[in-house]
Length: 403
Image: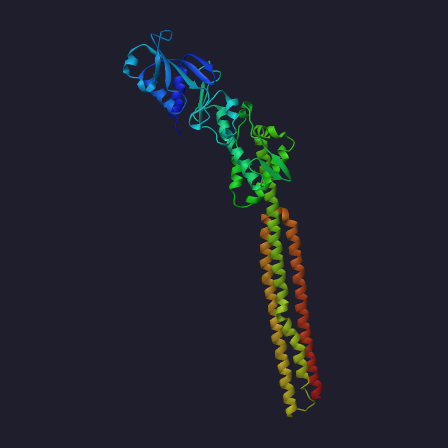
């Protein structure tokens, strides 16, 4: 940005004698010197002054001279009492040299809201010295004005994401903006840093956008379209607070859903593991009756010393070993259940500490797991009893056959 052009304009404007506003130009008189000549040349290059002037010698009320182009000015004009009648533009909307009559004039251009000027000279009605504002001037209104474009960009971004062009947000209904502000609106501080930080988050990004849309619609739906942007600027802090509260509620709900999903998934996994402890030996249990039936069918009536007696002993010992191995296998499943119990108890204990609000739900899951574990233990004990019972039946058949 070329700041020198505006500085030269301010110097010329304030140096004009008998300054008057005529047809969107300020007209006044200047005494020629090298500095004034250089400044006018620069303004002429920016189309802020014509570059050819009426001239008089002997003072403002002196004798008229021929029109005097800047290119023909030389040192002899500086040594004489030569005055020129200068016309300079009363307004310039180009950002490199922004000149307006006042805040209302500046704000009447929507482009100045979306792309704020960094320096501006307010000429007023032309009777005073004007007012030069920049980022270092310390003017509160100018400072607040610099933040307006952030609000504009926020609305534009949300509008584009909801297919509403650059001024309409579609969320449950259409919320259209007309970008209009007054000087009074700039008395309000503009700070949307908290919202900008939310939008920078990778997590929940889409949800945050729609959350802000929802708050804007709720906040401005009853405000007249032409006054919405102004109302938003005036009450921006309230909107930011609403957005932050809504986001906090969303995160809490999201966290609850995430935790609930997590402990439900863990519950499913542990219940499967608990039931698998019985299922792992279920096939072996099913094969036991068939094996014993086959074995007992081989027992024949006999006396000691006969081959049949020997076979009966071998069959009985085989059945005994088979039942012992199966019982030991079943007994080992109790250790598996114990290890699972220790694991899930610790896991859900930590979850309950981290998420106190979900403590009761987590306790219900633990109770459900404990019930599943008890059921499996009953099945395991029943399997042991059934196996031992079959063993005694075999031994009883052996004894009967021996007698």
